[in-house]
Amino acid sequence: MNLTLKIWRQKSPEDKGKMVEYKVTDISEHMSFLEMLDVLNEQLVEANEEPVAFDHDCREGICGMCSLYINGEAHGPDRGITTCQLHMRMFNDGDTIYIEPWRAKAFPVIKDLIVDRTALDRIQQAGGFISVNTSGNTQDADAILISKHAADEAMDAATCIGCGACVATCKNSSAMLFVGAKISQYALLPQGQIEASDRVLNMVRQMDLEGFGNCTNTGACEIECPKGISLVNIARMNREFLKASLKG
Amino acid sequence: MGILSSSIARKVAMALSAFFLMFFLLIHVSVNLVSVFSEDAFNTASHFMGTNPLIQYAMQPILLFGVIFHFVLGFVLELKNRNARVVKYYKNNGAANSTWMSRNMIFSGLVILAFIVLHFIDFWFPEVNYKYIAHLPEDPSRYYGELVHKFENPIRVGAYVVAFIFLALHLLHGFQSAFQSMGCNNKYTKYVKSFGKWYALLIPALFIFIALFHYFSH
Ligand code: HEM
Ligand code: SF4
Ligand code: FES
Image (cartoon, rainbow over all chains, first blue to last red; front, side, top):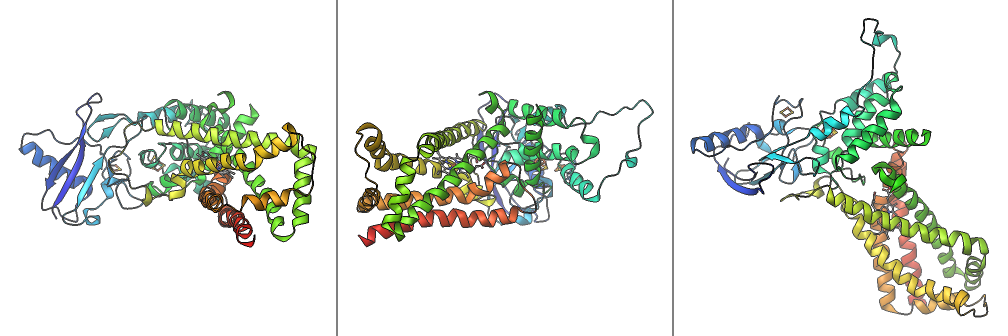
């Protein structure tokens, strides 16, 4: 198929940037979206132009590096996938496709379609861990009994790959689905209890400091999340936060 | 903003003020509904609400505070959220993943606010003037006539209907949203959502019915 692409080009964080139009031809419907961009970049390199910079790594939906706001949706029109898992068969011959970087004040553009998502790392560093003694007398994790239900829910929360689609898609640029998932994966397990209060207070404070917006429960994040992280995790974070705040 | 400096604290405060407003709405519609059935009963109920010191000097200031708190915090949230995305998308397909109501709480809220201002000019200012400024003699049978008189004007009735349609839109998202904000999302959530839909449609529909009832029957 032949496509018209309108892609955000921005040389550097300081550059103003603009949408630029490109044409690609003979795109196979079996290609992934990133492979289609590879074709475009080969074309650009041959023409001695600067290729379009975009993030990617595993190309199998597990690392969370690929991003892209495609035709007004995070990771494009399909559901439960990352951009590397998006197939060109979702599009039709002659389509015009808009490709933009994640937009949020907390995710500044580095170049073209690549944004700086280290704000999510800093939130994680503020409390998304447990402290264990690794000096040789570490307790066997299986010695602590955990209900199947709690283990399953914690595992579901832990599947978040930190891609940032929730932030990109949220009209408020809120990171609460990500933070809710990261808090839940510990809040549901006995190992997470000891540092529970500090964790939620510190992670939420860091989230606010990074300049993410306030959730208004539109639910867009849950729909666009490649891992199906549920709003239940945001509610759990709110409860954890209330509990920790009331304890003082 | 002290206690409201955290994003989640603001969400919770928003939800608490919203719960309070939704409870108030229930009382308000109940009293109004009485006017459909009996002139005397409506006068009695209104006289009680208008002269009971607990309602006048405790509930009324709390209500006033609650309304102002809710919309001021609503504006603060909206501004903060707009600031969280400086460069907007060229193409954004919001309808793909969220309802119109959820994306436009500030607009439905603004329409409600405009209505509240009109409502104050219509009912509350004359009422305060009657009781506390002009100190007119209390007449327990005046309320029904005042109500009916207000609903003679088709423009006012029209504005009333439009405002309550927007209240319904506000509540269609807001009711269940307030529960989520408070951290309630569990096996009962599907019942909360369906009850919320009923509440969001029924309460405004009753207000509209009462207005139209008086408009057409007098
Ligand atoms: C009787 C009148 C009103 C009622 C019953 C009401 C009810 C609600 C409810 C239930 C919510 C959801 C709360 C949550 O998600 O935690 C809400 C949110 C909101 N309201 Fe109102 N509201 C009223 C008036 C207003 C007014 C006058 C404004 C002024 C602009 C307003 C602006 C907002 C905004 C912006 C939100 C979204 C904030 C958020 O979800 O975090 N509301 N309202
Ligand atoms: S919650 Fe979902 S959308 Fe958000 S960062 Fe995690 S995987 Fe990505
Ligand atoms: S490149 Fe790893 S998830 Fe897409």
